[in-house]
Amino acid sequence: MMSTRLPDDWELPEEWGIWAEEEGLTREEVLSQEKQFFTYWTSSNARSPEKKDWKATWKMWVLGYASKRKR
Image 1: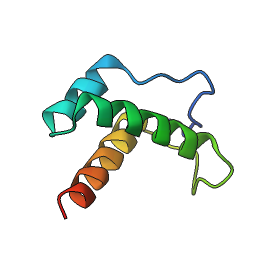
Image 2: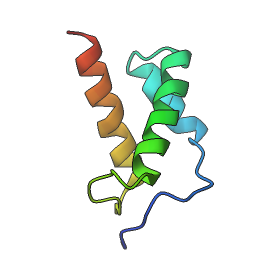
Image 3: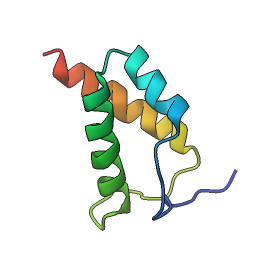
Image 4: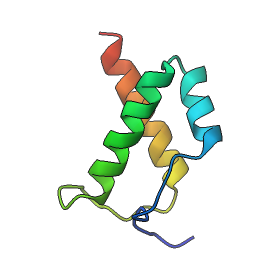
């Protein structure tokens, strides 16, 4: 699998949002995290902006957010 950048027209796949809700995020949090994820990974500030697996990157993003939220 080749590393790619997140496309400029990327939208969160429905199944990824459902997974995030199953991990405890509210619908509003999913939408907010979707915007932050997209903005971060398409900005010039992103570290290593090319990824092999964007779904896994989303899951790590959500899990990191969820763990910070619980503190």
